[in-house]
Image 1 (cartoon, rainbow, N blue to C red):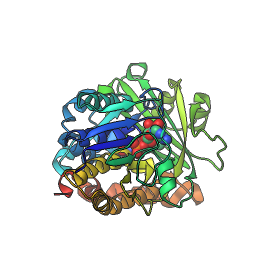
Image 2: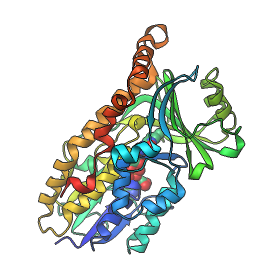
Image 3: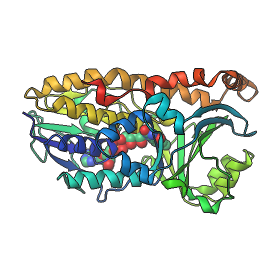
Image 4: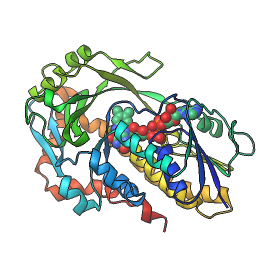
Length: 389
Ligand SMILES: Cc1cc2nc3c(=O)[nH]c(=O)nc-3n(C[C@H](O)[C@H](O)[C@H](O)COP(=O)(O)OP(=O)(O)OC[C@H]3O[C@@H](n4cnc5c(N)ncnc54)[C@H](O)[C@@H]3O)c2cc1C
């Protein structure tokens, strides 16, 4: 029976898995390369499917206390501010999808996960990179019944397991930042998750930390990217210049943004192989999802729960991992494809400043809300905690 687990990576996926396994009486050790457990200072949208997992893990109350519940998801034209699509999220999400929709600061979520993992006795080893496993499936540092690589898109364990290419630059960069809400005119930012669309770029705005901070993610197309670090402090002036002439809400927000990070977006297909003996991959290591559907972390969170249930009380670990992969692969592949398609919807392209893209959004504007909400059913209504019973 699985009694011990090693996890590489204390990101959202690794820590969620640590909690789900520890709650099943499994002794867990987490190895994290960073010297400190910190998440890049930016927001995260936690959709109902992710919240159902956190509910099952008993973390929903703690999350509600530090989050912001948006009223709607809105798609707006970046220059005129005209709303094309408006989907109810606050009351609507619970009713339609069976769970809350929350916006959380990554560091707040990370703190909650760390605290719960520590409470459950998970041992965390910081400043401890782990790069490979041996023929027995043991990490190069430590033995356990199961080893889980939740080490992100550049996973060395995934590389060892799969003959695959390195992640590819998508031609897009994301600027991320958060500004105190009281540095902005009152009511400037609506209490929604708003996507501002434009030619070759878009910007997402939403509140986090109970409304104290406004988070933004601005995605811009770039023909090349030479920085190998792929996340670095960004130039706030360059960001402002890039969105010059956009709607006053956008420019006023960016005017008070002094600290931004710039992050190159890389893509990698869902891997063919998610496990090797008693080593399993999880989250971005096996199926990174571009941010255009806000589901990458949600998929890692779902993986973590499903994997813990598959391993609960079993003797045959490779068989349990096969089951895990079978349960998770189709869904993560579907989401990965959706995210890629959304990039086209948010960025106007082609003749006359994306006449066709705009026309499509105008059509969406005329559709009944229920019809617009329909494509989200398969994403948000899913309940990973029931999918395996
Ligand atoms: C701009 C942007 C916005 C996004 N917005 C959303 C959103 O709103 N909602 C959502 O659901 N998703 C979102 N995502 C996706 C989400 O951030 C990722 O999918 C998620 O963080 C993946 O979690 P993970 O735990 O699998 O990997 P990671 O978060 O990458 O964590 C991997 C961890 O492993 C550690 N590590 C790596 N290698 C080693 C090693 N060799 N040894 C030890 N430790 C190691 C790393 O230091 C890190 O702590 C967004 C992504 C981007 C880029």
